[in-house]
Length: 416
Ligand SMILES: [Fe+2]
Ligand SMILES: [Fe+2]
Image 1 (cartoon, rainbow, N blue to C red):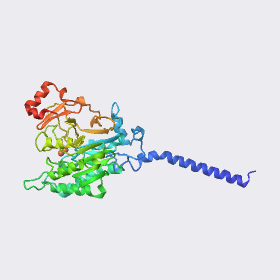
Image 2 (tube, rainbow, N blue to C red):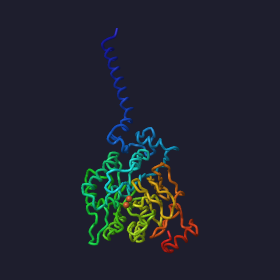
Image 3 (cartoon, rainbow, N blue to C red):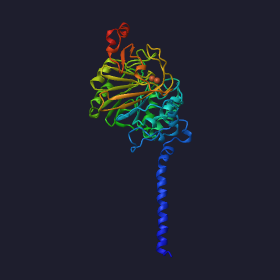
Image 4 (cartoon, protein in one colour):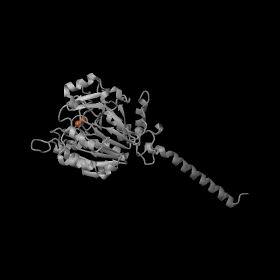
């Protein structure tokens, strides 16, 4: 016969067993909760993006494909030979640019969503954007229309990044907040600038970067991520006022900049043009050589720019020039090339132990194939100078390639 103590022991044993089983089940359910719960867009957002939160606890190596959200997995699975998964650096940036569609549009092209949906595959530490996030710079747009564009940007791009806790470092483009001035010296698009400034300065829209100096955020500011120092200047038109350039140089010499292992500059207009339709004064930064000398003097490693709507990894002098391709509408062909234009997105891995410091992995956003350097022109000669592809030295150019440049631009502009 069982004593009452024995009965109680058996009863407690059953309860303990049940409780253990329940706890184990809850633990096993956790990964699903991560992918199907708060980190996956609600049904209203389902056709937009699937950005998974970057948890502090996540390992820094590549994510397991089984953990990918359905929208990400569907894109990855659609790539015939598999989506190229680059070796991870110490720090990884997803670099995007020129997201906007036609003037006044509150919609985005599918490649914008595709790029964001793939973030859980790449697991960047930060997203960086070289401008043109909305479609302004059109005088007849009303304030309400401009606000509606920023609301659409927030809904489609910024809010999912905030939710995923991915910092967003950016610079403004001419379609966001043009700094072009009229004869009177006043901003021609003061309303665009005002709305953009109010949008970005609203605490609810904090981009999540670690600011060093907010100076004139969102036009001029500095921030850092671990050992990377970023400076954003207002390259939404070709001229940077003298007082702002003084701030730029001072910031590049600040203790935070000096303590960093790499300095990266973000600006919309490039120093040199690389695509058709952008090869004229006003479409590139003015006083290019002085700017480049200043950046080299202050050990800026890379200038990340947008505006040209064509990916071109270049270098000139000591400076790396990442001309970011676009995700929005209007890819442009390269100057002097017959290559069809394409939309792209770049993953930049920073390796502090490698002499080059950075590696680009750039994808054609239609085919999702990796773009190799040797598919691109070896050099591009624009009206204000030649730039070389990142892996090309001047001596790699043939005599005819050099003389082509010199006959057009003169020997001075044809050195790199
Ligand atoms: Fe653009
Ligand atoms: Fe632009």
